[in-house]
Image (cartoon, rainbow, N blue to C red; front, side, top):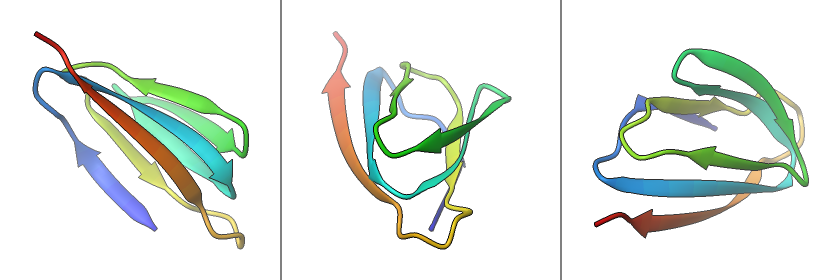
Amino acid sequence: MTVGPHRHGNNEEMYIVLSGGGTMTIEGEVQQIKAGDMILNAAFAEHGLVSDTDAPLDLLVIQVGMD
């Protein structure tokens, strides 16, 4: 699974990694993620995700609009 680099408008997302792992890039900063991690994608921040393990990557994504 790959979610290429992109930006959202005036909203935030929280990625909760349920299983698997991968490489998350937020505003050019690269980090490895694994089950149990929670990642905040701030409003207007560029982010992307690559699943680079053999295990399936399962995420719970919560998105909140910011006024």
